[in-house]
Amino acid sequence: MARILLLLLSAACLHTGNSAGYPKKYDYGVDQPAVLSGVQSGSIEIPFSFYFPWELAKDPQMRIAWRWKVFHGEFIYNSTQPFIHEHFKGRLIMNWTQGQTSGVLRILNLKENDQATYFSRVFLRTTEGMKSWQSIPGTQLIIHALITTPGSPSIIPSAVPTTGLEDTRGQRTPSLLNLGAMVGMVVSKVVVIIPLYGWVIFLWWKQRTQFRRDLVSEHPWKNFVPILPAESSSFL
Image (cartoon, rainbow, N blue to C red; front, side, top):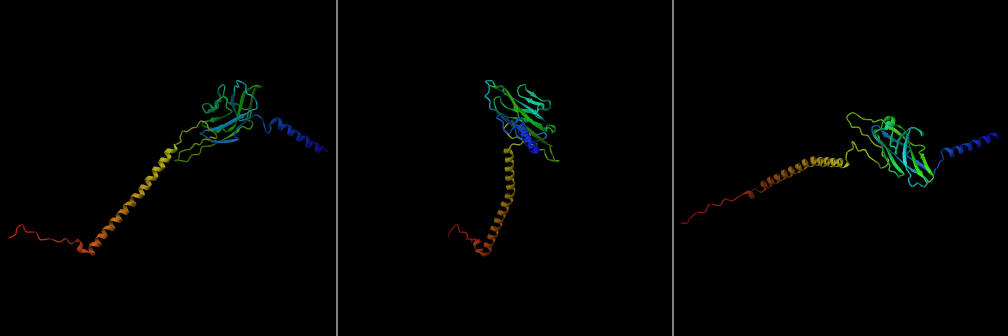
């Protein structure tokens, strides 16, 4: 009997902790991808969106902030001050407009120690007062080392899950690549076709010459040209 009561008490405690701490469903929250990966010296975009049930005040004063490493970690960005953490100076771009419920945080020139978990936090004013909340799991960013081989250029990919600013340095225009491929195909065809045409013309000329020789040997009279006597200029 005591064992049964202990099991029931444990189940009640687990249920209470779940609803108070991390319930499965909120009527407000922040959505972010669970995991993203990037390459050193490349760039990456972390998309986010948020939702809420409250009615916004006339001046909602929306702002977005980002933390990293842990849920209560240091702020690395704040849209109102504006503030950027010293570690990310010159490497953060926030693609978000006041009033929008989604945006993108872009990190440029990725470093090995950028590998961490990132949490976006929302602040806004409603008719019920100021509200703030943030992503609970955040986005885990994994950084891979840049691998290059001797004699080959290094390619730095960018992880771009949503529309945003793009880093096009070092990329080649697809139209130029297509044009180069077409020119290469044409040149290769010309190199093959010209000798082939020359060989066909040579065979035709040789066959025609042999035919004329055979014709002369079989019908020599066809080449006979009669010689007429010269006409006298006067009659006796």
